[in-house]
Length: 279
Image (cartoon, rainbow, N blue to C red; front, side):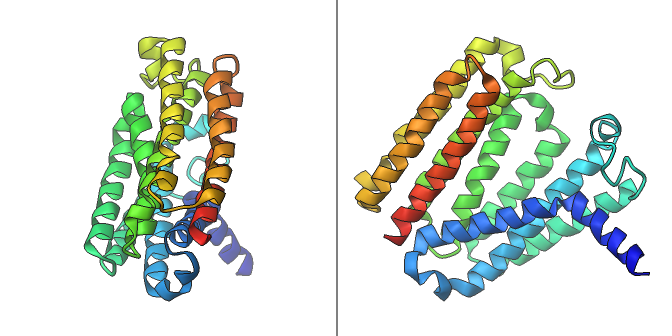
């Protein structure tokens, strides 16, 4: 009996990508901390409701992905619950539908702006999985938008979205650049997608990716110049900027290294905003 329960829990955890769900919630908490600073705990109600929103949203997106990619996963990820025969496709679809419903319903406990952000994000992720994922740049922009939405939501739920606008824009631009570089890296294997590198060539796509990284760098100065964050933030974000600049150059020789360092840059930028928020 216990083995059966454990196996059931395990396959559901695999479908929703439990680790990704938890990481999404942690990123939300960090964003609220950036926005509120020492007053973080005073917003426990909004944090609790939005945590359910984010957890269910990520779970729904991953479940829908497994349902729609079930044929591809027979080759690419045969160990996943659907291709391995441990879960029916219809179960994953019902799970995705339920999770999205929970995400939207939980958002109704928040303010109107937060509700709007969640509704837009749900619409974009469903459209991405059904249609835009195969459309190259449009799909890249969709992922960038969804990344930015997480940071917008973290500010919106506490009525301080202006403090997270810059990091949302930076995260979106950095994600866009990284997604384009990943498409350059995966160009030969993307037989079912019309990616930007396929449309305009590797070098031109690389220039677009670099421009996105550099736009993120330019935006990083806004919170300091606007007086929202102090010198501590500026010194920290300059480290992130240096990583993004390096990524914008090195990916022309090594796309994998470029997109990997971009991920590090996003982490350092998050730390910089956290320093700005709490100081």
